[in-house]
Length: 180
Length: 219
Image (cartoon, rainbow over all chains, first blue to last red; front, side, top):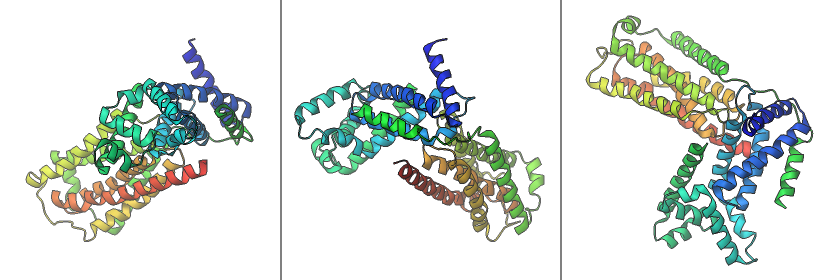
């Protein structure tokens, strides 16, 4: 049996036990799926603080949605549907991303910005976006500029920024779904 | 630091773990909703007025009318299925959504074409004076029951789930009016299918409210 199948079988069994109230297996399951979710997100978004926040949001959602897992169905589609959707929700909410910069504002801000850019470039999702959507998403959602500031920097209207953010998030969602 | 926070969160979530009852499959609840909703709409519709004279005969003899009606029934079934699929993470299917949208548009376009080439001779026979209000009245309980059945699971995209069940709930009375009210494609579009937009808005609002409520509980 491959690792993939082995993980699938084990996670499914542990979730069934968790549904019955088994704390020990549930803790093990959450630990493993958190690592899997983190790997999934790092690969797509780069090594940003956002990813860890997102993993924790995913864990809370998994907890709240654990009654919807059916052992007759595969575990991974259920898990990664949650991960993908929470990532998009967080991307949309903006605040989580802004924390990445705010936390390091007093500590080598420029260096940090360069590091974040490098990490973003490693992530598959942003590099696949069209340049117009990518620039707006990065400025508005990653670096935390307001819509007005983003519009000024790119020489477009605020309405265009909002539209491009909306479309960029939609495009990101598509990329995540197709990669599944 | 982050690792510690994650570990604390995992410990917190797994401590005093309450057993949960798995929500199971979606086919049975979807079927129950479908049958109950139809039962309610037909019972209420017959209670408040008779079927249009000759409608059932037309349903067996006029191919275009049969086609329109069948498409409507398929739309209800597909949107019902999509709504229940949306209630379980990872279960929704893109191809099903595309088919449902396509058939939904085809259903509406049948009546647009019908304005020029009607399936039956348009007439005022069987006209119900308050068919719009009836359509709203009939669609609300199925919408609320559907909302309850879906949101006790865990839809990830709540607004979409709300809209899907609303379309299903709104299309049932629209379809019933096909045989209960007067036949005129323009009247069907404005008085029977048009009212679907109200439950759609309600479904979206309920879905949006649910998102807000759910994630505030998670914090």
